[in-house]
Length: 288
Image (cartoon, rainbow, N blue to C red; front, side, top):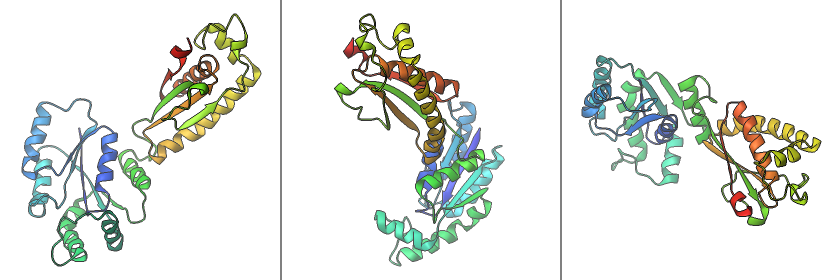
């Protein structure tokens, strides 16, 4: 099992890095008592954490014994048969000062000497841990999304790798209002409407006859080709930007015929391209 240790300067992005690891399936423990780390690892060895990509321990100067026992803790972990991957985050002093000013949070070492002195003292306390690090990330000029990409790049050697983004395709009817949670809205009311075909009116987009009426039109075929290509371009960019889920709403007038058929077809194409996608139909029951 992979063991990550996240450490570094306060205000440099440890919490963000820990959340990225948690999203990737790691069992994350923040500010865990150092003295209990060997016992916890032994417990995990006896009874491994289910469905966990690994363990990530956030260790820093909030722990009163970190300065004197941090290195000893790492050595104990190694002696237990683990090879910890130590991720060290840092940032320039002026950036840290600005971040603490913006968030109005208290530095864990803040005393009567002030913030500048506290940051300097923390750098000194963490110098040994920094020398042991397997990766050092300077977040001075990084946005949250850039930091996330850096952590993923360290994990997988690819910022776009990792847990797949969950995609939800949702058909709906415009007469009942837009879905409030939609990230993208696709309007298919330009397609021929089966509602005006008497034999098709009672059916829905899940029925073969309706699906064929909608999908076999040349305009529908071209629309699906262009939309699928557009999604193939956009989805990796959303994933790289840090989205863990995306809702794509497909709407027609009532949410019974065209939107259902198109959503089902897009679902089949995205599944074929190995995307993690599910489909649901908000207004189908209401229309029926």
